[in-house]
Structure formats: structure tokens, C-alpha cells
Image 1 (spheres, rainbow, N blue to C red):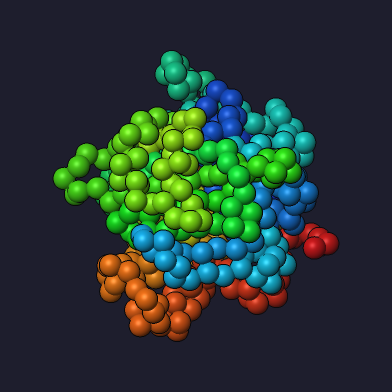
Image 2 (cartoon, rainbow, N blue to C red):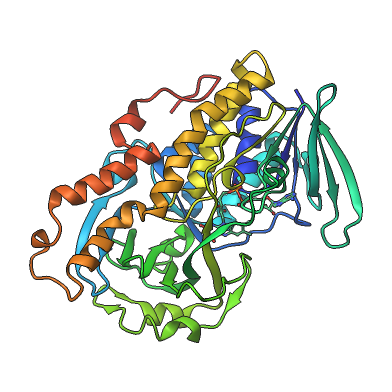
Length: 425
Ligand SMILES: Cc1cc2nc3c(=O)[nH]c(=O)nc-3n(C[C@H](O)[C@H](O)[C@H](O)COP(=O)(O)OP(=O)(O)OC[C@H]3O[C@@H](n4cnc5c(N)ncnc54)[C@H](O)[C@@H]3O)c2cc1C
């Protein structure tokens, strides 16, 4: 079975590795960029996805670069503690949660694809512009050099999988009327700053509410070993509905003064946000966008995966994790079902509704809802948290989100492996 993967991001690389592990190795990855570059800032990969990467044999490589995040706390805009819980191994999962630079995660995946499939199977400089299917030959896609527009290749395969991100051309081919990603009015400024370990040293902090928030966590094991912390931060502001949407480009540089004044009050005894912003070498600006869930991913010999299939607001850290799970589920179905069409249908069945629920939950603030409740009910702060939001409400919000994301501890620890071949966990 010849499989063409369009897009060499986290989803595309995870699919390539999952297919090889499932015994399907006639696989090619077509990537628009001229090389696989380590772009972006920090992301979180949650235990449900680290389980899959562990079963793909990548735990040691990830442990060498990522921080196994140990605990999490929500604070209000005024720095008052609202909710907290242990994470990853500390919470009782059999797999860690990693905070990691997106580029380093991609590098781990890329090296593994190169080793297991061969570098010649990764075709950089191949920007897909058209795709389709033909009942006799399967699927096809036309690629050009993105810089010059010159035709490069016609890709032909039994199956073509669009892992080409939120601006997916494959998705646009399947849903030409859909329109561009939708902005919720929130702008994110992101950066990494060298600093000192804070709180437990492996803590993730989220302070504020949907109106104004900062999320902060360390991402580098190498720096941790030197007694330092490479701190990833995301500062978000809900801008007036009339404002223009910032460009959707992960390399869109911003000025620090765009965001410093708004976050001047975010100086707490555990965190000094203005200092973090000032200390970053570069900062990036990006709008918070997503797309409505799709009515189908089941198009016979063409389908979608990762952000191309279910772009979601970065709330609850599930974008990369869900792409990795898609990859594992789809590879398993392709190995076990009697036909490609049956595998695509089974993949659609298992993953589309599940990820649609997350897209919708993230639009309603997902697990961050607890901060919005506090902001709404006690805008000037509180002396007794339980008079503002009950422990039960807080537990329900956190529990509901884990259920939707497929990350309940007992469920994940006890569910059967997605591996087609036996693995040692
Ligand atoms: C450059 C970049 C930086 C990012 N930085 C962050 C970050 O700092 N923090 C964070 O939380 N998330 C970041 N993300 C998003 C995050 O990686 C994804 O949400 C998530 O990992 C899902 O991955 P994906 O592979 O489905 O999509 P993506 O990560 O978007 O990968 C899609 C891949 O497809 C390629 N591609 C796009 N169009 C075409 C085409 N027409 N033909 C061929 N190839 C194509 C892209 O170059 C990219 O490599 C970033 C994404 C990108 C592309």
C-alpha cells in the first residue's frame, strides 16, 4: 500500500512512524518548506500522546530534551490561587507529560523517520497545490516549489493524507466553500526567556482569564541540568471585536511594547511577567484561530489528520497530542482493516467526533473555565475561594475536560495498546 503524507509537521511525522511500526513502510512525506526547520516555541505533549510516542520507542529521546512537567496551578488575574493538580507521572499516569520546544519535538520525530524509513522518503520543497482521487489509480497530488511556483512533482499513491496544518490545501480541496480559519478576538504573544527555576522547577502556571491570561512553563531539560530554566510563555489578550486579526504566521515577530503595558500588573511573588517579556530575545504574535468541526473525513482514498482535520484553540494543550493519537489510530486501522476505504471509515468513526468535542470545549475555555467563573463572580479578588467557586465545580471542570480529551488517568492507564505488534511498555 503506497501512502503519501502531505505535511512534515508533528502530525505527518507521527503518522509516518506509526505506519512503519504497523508494518506499512511504503510511505512518503511531502513537506512544503525547503528543509525541516525547528520553528516555534514551547508546546505540551500530554500523557495520552506520550504513551503513543513511548510505544513508538521515543521516550528516551524525549526525556533527554523535554521537561517532565510535574504540577499545574491556576491563578486569578490578581495572582490568587484557584486550582492546582499534579501532572504526568506525579498524577499517577504511567507516562509523563512533557513541556518541550516544538522544534525539538519535531527533531526527535524527524530523526526517527530518517532512521526507520530513510531520508529519501522525506521530500522537502514539495508544496501541494491540488489533490484528488481517481477510482483506478487511487489518489494524486500536484506539488510546486513554493518560492518559485515551478511544478516539482505529481504524487501518486493508494492513499493521500492531508497533514498540512490549519491552512490545509487538502481540506480546502474537500471543502472548497469552507473559508479561512475563524478568529475569536484573542491575540497571543509567545516567547522563551532564560531564567531561574520557579515553584517546583517543573511547574506550569496559568494566571488570568479569557480576557487576559499568561501561561508559563519551563521547556528545556538541558538548561534544567545547568540549574537554569528556559521559560516558555504565552500572553493573551482579548482584543476588541473591531480590531484587525494579526497575520497567521508562526514567524510573525512582535514588539515587546505591544504587550508590556497590559501585563504590567502581572507581578506576583511567584512570577514576574513583565520581566519575562523583557527578557525574551524575540517574541511572536499569532491570532487564536480554529475551524468548525467537519461533517466527514471519510473520502475514500483521501483524508485529513492533525490540525488539517481539527484545528483547535490552544487551550488545554491538545493540538499536538491529538495529532499524535490520530496517527496511531489511523495506522492501526490501515494495518487491520480489509481495505483502505474501511480503514478511513474506521478512523473517521473513532477520531472525528472525539476531536470535534475538544474543538467545541476549547471554544468555551475548556479547563480554563474555572478562571472565568472567578473573574465573573469576584472581579476584585476574594478572601475565601469556596465562597466564589465550590471545590465540586472546580473538580467537575477539570474532570470533564480530561474525559473529553481522553486523558482520564485510570482509563488511559488501563486501555489496550494501539500497537499492532506487541510492545513492552
Ligand atoms: C512553523 C510552525 C510553528 C508552530 N509553533 C507552535 C508553537 O510554538 N506552539 C504550539 O503550541 N504550536 C505550534 N505550532 C502548531 C502545532 O505544531 C500544531 O498545532 C500541532 O502540532 C499539530 O500538528 P500538525 O502536524 O497537524 O500541523 P502543523 O504543525 O501545522 O504542520 C503542518 C505541516 O505541513 C506543512 N504544509 C503546510 N501546507 C503544506 C502544503 N500545501 N504542502 C506540503 N506541506 C504543507 C507545514 O509546513 C508543516 O510542516 C506550529 C506550527 C508550525 C507549522
